[in-house]
Amino acid sequence: MEPVIVLVGVTGVLLVIGRVGVRPLRRPAVALRGGLAAMFLLTGGSHFVGMRPEMIAMVPDWVPAPEFVVTLTGLAEIAGAIGLLWPRTVAAAASCLTLLLVVMFPANVHLALSGGPLPWWDELLPRTIAQLVFLAATTTVAVDAWRRHSRGLRRRDEDVREPDAVRTGAR
Image (cartoon, rainbow, N blue to C red; front, top):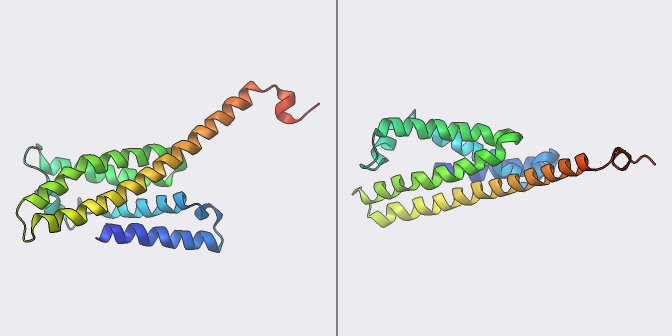
């Protein structure tokens, strides 16, 4: 539940800051990038501190070297969070984080079905809803970034094809 709170809280704060005067944060996708970055720093860090044993226990039995997998996914989450903050890497980072969420979802299913203190549906349903929120957020940021990236490439291609007189406005 903490990751959802961080995502929503940081995104909300950044949107408010954008409304008060920081122009780049007025775009919801930019504020969402900040919320996702904070969330993935939190979840990525928990792969190393605090929840590491629980994370290792979540890894399905059929996955080899659970400790290594937890380390690798934690590093991927932290790298993705950093990538969301740099405009040149936003599209790739959001796309990779989307894929990472899909690949890691079986660990949530494994945890829910492994016979914890709650019935499996009480474990799986909230995790699935949270995962869908995260996927919606990373997909939104990825689509926005790829669209903006492709528009920028088209503009540069058009600039290259136009004669200097047309581009500079000279007659």
